[in-house]
Length: 556
Image 1 (cartoon, rainbow, N blue to C red):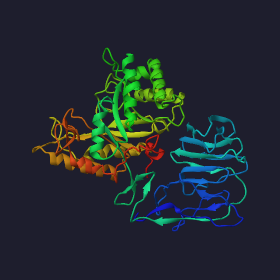
Image 2: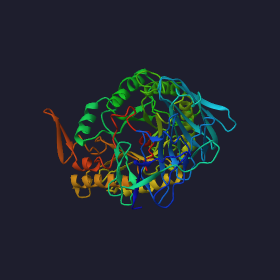
Image 3: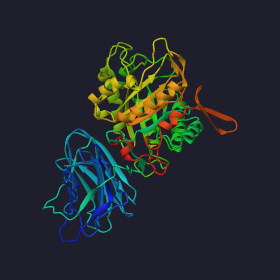
Image 4: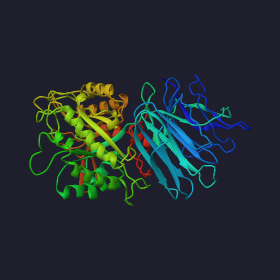
């Protein structure tokens, strides 16, 4: 895959004529044969149009947005051989889900008017609807089984006052087609521009290619800032490294006192969001007061914590709803929820190794908890569920046994560290030695994007403390993640069991002074490893901080 092709606005050339329709064809290999029916007299590409990088030798996903004088219909994650067209006959759009999928529908009216979008089953019965008024977008996200569905927008688009933009996407990619009749004929074409010598920006992010020509843009994350209480530390790190962190990991338990929950939703999460980072909430089912029961996962699955979960979920939905307190409006927020992580170890109460339980109990706990959230309407456009395994199994069970299935998970992830010789049982390991085994295993059981949600390296080697060895490990780690198609890397930036920190820790090969009284020790290799051309931070100009593509981990 040597020639990266980019579908660009500049190469759209409509032709005049009375025939209707648009035939999209590539300049090589004949890979694209999709036809999109629209009004030829006013067809144009909108300024929202952006196209994922496409390689001419393999099938990839194309992101297409087309405008007409009556409506706008945008399709994301449309595969090459899918027929995608717009009808002006009955206003229905057909969606064929090839697998159990998450269907995302968003409606954006172009004028201050009321519109309704309905999702219908194969028999035409409504599943869910959303009202969008006064040019505010309305969105639906549904977990649906394999089958055929229809999208209907009301009132009829034939009225000049009801211009709108409809965006459909599925995770994983499924077939999006239009219910229409009549033949489609060629009007114009979109050609490819060979940009292999200079990879263009996609969704306002600078893309990077690996040696095989594949575009990779992992999200940059960090655990730092004392769970959202000390954002000055995060701001200093971001100023030093020259970019925002897309994700900020933090930990919270299942404390029964109201203070824990109030602090989280009133202070910690808003602090993180206001710093333009998306919070990753590591939600640990550790109960306060007495020690956590070793069968905590059984108790949760059986409903004994439902009151707490419902209250917590309601508070989270309020946070996600933004300052207006109304979910599914323009000021909504986003979060990653990393629930009950490292279950395949033997150190947490929710592990089957504790209390003589089984991985099935963990799976039941996960499904029961997520079902409660889903019933409250928190969809994948606002909340992504992250299932995280330790890089090695401990306790007699495998990570695979704990997996609840792709229908209940948005991301799969790994926690792993190079402990060096910091512990009596540890030795120096390369990034590949830390992650290769579990990475291959997770990709075998899931099609979800893979993240690394905790990672760090010690300076302790068999020859003693070595800043140089840790620096080289950082360089190797960031390169490894890009080449292995990891979609998110979150550095554990705290000296805990050993000197994990890359910024502000006990060791470093440089210093950063944001003011006369404060000095942070730093590693130049960390800053170099996350340069803008290789890792993606948040977009402070995007109200949601990340595009859907990046939030979902769907970078090519």
